[in-house]
Amino acid sequence: MRCAQKPLVPNPSAAQHRTANRTIVENNNACFIVRDKNGQGLGYFYFEEEPARRAAANLLSRDEARRLGVNFAKLPELLQREE
Image (cartoon, rainbow, N blue to C red; front, side, top):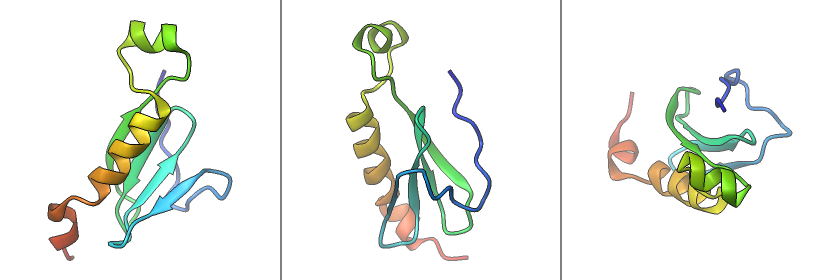
């Protein structure tokens, strides 16, 4: 399973969560991608829906991956960085 690269323009059908520092947490049905305000992918959090496949591949659940992505987007290092 591979998390496909998305274009810099966000997909309107993909679920997104925007944080205060303009990072975007984007869901593309295989992973959550944390992007900065320029669209650069900063973190990829893979998940699996089926418990048996999740255990075999040692992946996160969807909720765990989403929470990690949102918390990653809130890290102080990302908030302080201005370009």
